[in-house]
Length: 99
Image (tube, rainbow, N blue to C red; front, side, top):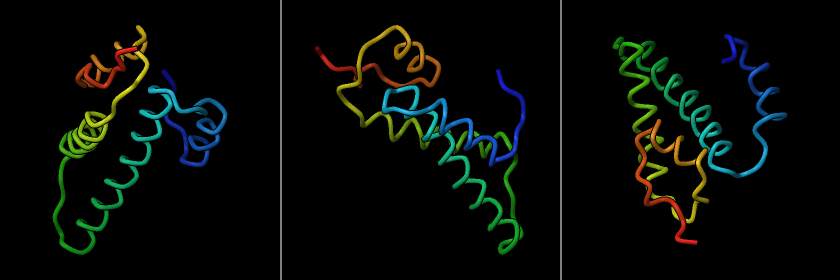
């Protein structure tokens, strides 16, 4: 597991290690994008509406968005790694192709 790094470092790391369009790479990109999006929304709520959510609520929203998006996918290669990712994220194995 990697430690905390800056956003610039994260993007640099991702551009080297998360290329391609496999499930793991796509999931990583979704997590990064959804996290940034929801952090920005949370920032706006705190600044303009004077309301806030706790960190666990924010993480739950990000996870739910990603699960919702991935649940619509089909024709994902059925491999042991992809099955583990689906189990970790509680994503239906209906996303796997029949081939």
